[in-house]
Amino acid sequence: MKVGIVGIGHGKFGRRDDATVQELAFEPFKEALDDSGLSKEDIGATVIGSSPEYHKQRSLPGVVAEYLGMNPQMTYLTEAACASSSAALHNAVAYIKAGIYDIMAVVGAQKMTELTTPEILALMGRVGDVQWESVFGTTFPGYYAMYARRHMHDFGTTEEQMAKVAVKNHAHGLHNPNAMFQKEITLEKALGSRPVASPLKLYDCCGNADGAACVIVAEESKAKSISDTPIWLKGMGAASASMSVLRRKELNSIPSAVEASKQAYEQAKVEPKDLHLAEVHDCFTIAEIIAYEDIGLAKKGEGSKLIDEGQTYRDGKMPVNVDGGLKAKGHPVGATGASMTVEAVKQLRGEAGKRQVDGAELVLTHNVGGIGQYCFVNIYSR
Amino acid sequence: MTLELGKVSFVTATKTKEYLDYLEKGKLAGTKCKSCGALHFPPRADCDQCMSSDVEWMDMESKGKIVTYTTIHVGPTGFEDVVPYTICMVELEGGGRLLGWLDEAKEEDISVGQDVSVVLKELEGDRVIYAIRL
Image (cartoon, rainbow over all chains, first blue to last red):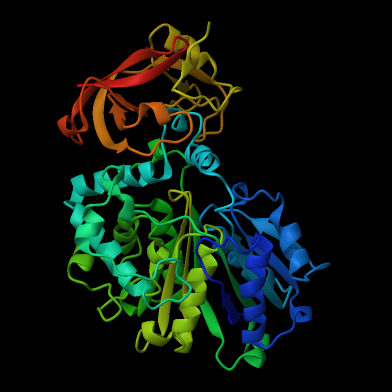
């Protein structure tokens, strides 16, 4: 049995001083209902993807489901750090395939700006293994910086190539009204920005944001009756890797991404060369270059060539992150996976406006949680 | 007085607390699974290879090579007063990896693959860090 996406919604990402997290969640949920033509009574259950430690409100699904008018239906949280709503989608699809529900809503919602800077800095100091690594002051940028340093050493990747990823994604974000940043940046500006964790600079890092996105999924026959253009989940890969980076054999590749993409390609019976677009997890510029390699768009060590040659621009041979990626959209961690899926669906329906990739028929999303502790890779088609 | 590892501690209860006694004696210690022989460093109380909980302590080498490194300019809570600091990941001779702080050298002086020593350096009296020296 196939599972189809029949409704999508995407709120404005950024500093949302105007809304609570449940109010943020309402925006894309309502939009997805309208998009699908369904009413909330048609939805069998909701799964909420979020990283709970950023919220003052404890037990987020309680308040979100209430605000969406989705009691007494089942709801709960999935947590996989920055891949939490991809985990929620994985859950919803499993329920549908098991025949328990016909239609489900996945809501990725996150508010990150209600914490004070000291609170954010305290959280940042506990992203790694707290027993053996955080005691030396590791940070989220610091981990990806260690990956970047190793990738530079192993393959000759340069800081300029990383900066080019930021320039590209900001150029793409210009055409995404839901993006946090809608302005182009220059290579000079990116390279001249202040150091955060060497070799990563400010413009190598995505920004914390508030935001929400929603995806409604349905079993095959229902999907066909609900929508003229259901988008099918052809492959869904999911994998994990050690929390401790000390236990990773290599530091130039995210092992969970390699494994998850292998599963997704096998299920979908397609190869990387068949893709028309990929939305990848560019939490840091180096992460996008590593993603090119991990999902097979480039050979290992040759990811930086793709950006040097401009191949991953919207009009290039293999467009990547045409919605601006995490870099320009902002990264409300729990909403990012659902946001990627929304873009995949828009592109496959031909509804992406100025950022439409011509002839997009096969799209991949690559959503990494943490420093690759979790990874979900999905392949979608019309 | 028992030494604590690193600048800030988050874990207070662990089956590997004997590790701190070795630190006090100036030693790096890992655990070895008595059932399958797997070496664990950082130490584990339980073997994830064969699932045995029968492990013994063993001394680790204090020499190794730099795997990767970064200099943190924006530090988390508890580290504001020491930025910038350079974190090195070191692969010890004979196996095992650790993170430590580059000491008595600058980031410009080091490279991936470089030979280094891990020295236990006391900090603020009751704390000890891995100082990575050339």
